[in-house]
Length: 409
Image: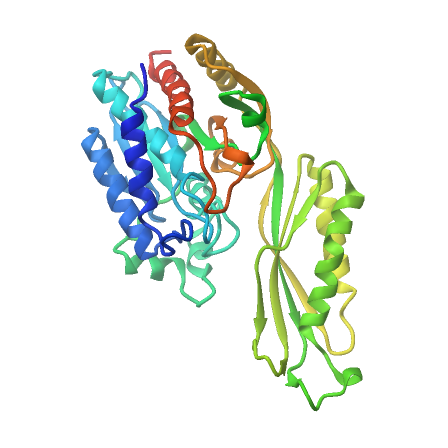
């Protein structure tokens, strides 16, 4: 069954409107006004495709098509709908739209599944508001306690429950999902790299996902006047932070094995042009395909940070996220490959250097993840783009796979 490209394009354009930075990329932070607008649209589409809609205690959205088998576990399809600041229209939403289009195809073809089909739109995968990332899937997997959620705050000190209530969500609802209620999870994502486009391949069937961790480093110094404090009397938090950050790439290169480090966010206090900074907080993202290398780099970063504890400088390192490298389910991968062959869709097996909700949910159910091409390999920027026919090709593979998984087995 062919995916409806006009319908897919309509969804892409609709969701792209819900941004805090019009004409400067998609900025849709979790529980923002743009989040609310997007979730209203997603829920309306789910209902239009005959799904029963609900939200959990983190605001993850579920649309369910009941199956013939009573109390059977669901095949879940979807992705996340939050964004990085000034990101693109496809990272996350493409996978949510894949789920919506699959639900529409089930409706168009009057498919009554044996096992239920659920479409999901998850929150805070990027971690752009609350840090860490993958919050929606971690909640579903049971990795976040109520205390964790209550204590998680954004840069303005607003907690998750407070932010939820501002857009009318109920944080008292259950979040953790009983694994027995999930038969499988399928996700489609843009590649965010150049391989599929360069090789002119339609689909990447993901075999494994990189291990990653995120650290939050705090450097405390002492504020002072920029003109009257001698250089040898200063405890400048920003100078210490800059020296630490400048050495992080070398740590990754010396570790090898594809290890990478990235400082993507930092805050300087009090942030005055004529005041010596007394505090700097910055993130360190560490990734490798092998867990031992992730752990090695973490320890080296901690040692480096601690080495600056002198002359009035104090440091602290907190680990806000840790995910092991994951191999995805071989059975689901074989079904995805068979669906590609059935449709005559070209595919290759791939490793993912980016983290995805699929890596979290693979701890509690069988998971399949596919990639579709990214123009020039670009992502996390306004130029991010994937052709509609390429999205449709990936959706058709996911649809055939969802049909097989929702059949009697």
